[in-house]
Length: 255
Image 1 (cartoon, rainbow, N blue to C red):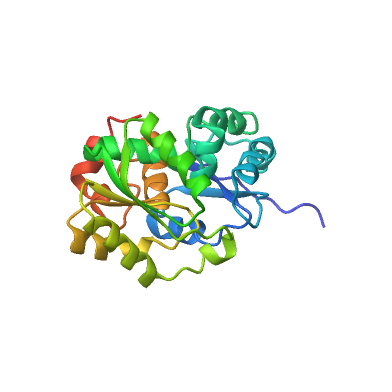
Image 2 (image 1 turned 90 degrees about the horizontal axis):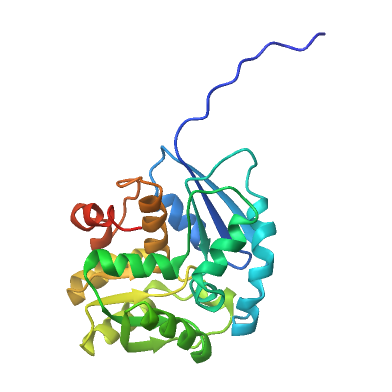
């Protein structure tokens, strides 16, 4: 039988890419909830260690080009996100952007650190209560990177858990209780829940209601910033003040 005839459809809609840690069990499900269905989201994974240390985070820089290169070819992505908050601080935002651009064609690159700084500008926030799941040395590097970006973390708490598999299983109740305790210390204008593997999405509305503070998380700010950089205001829908119409409108002016 000769080949059967067929026709091709034109590619429509924006395209976003996401580089996910091998050990991450949370961010993909969160992004499916946060992004509207009229865009194309492509995901690749990067090797990552079972335990989070400064050394294991830094080693991912060399693997980023190959991970990005596994995204579909022939697409110029509107934005690509790298899903690791602590590694973004360890490698540096510029280093992440260079490594990803070496593997794939994209208009913009971001990660949770740059996304968080953009979100704080959108909300007019300069002081965070900061909840981390990780050990002190990893958290200290991220806090220093935030300070360099003009955001202080006068209130800080951590679960001090080095194992990624255990971080992914910290329950929602524990996160809400910890966030509530940090907010109660005072001195912060918003609460940040760090780590793309931490299950934070279902804590945001409850914590905002209890604390009267904006609540940000790694996955929330990363999805929002990817959409903002791609010129897709309104592409994200989810909990919290950041995704409400007013800050989203201001955020459209933020690169």
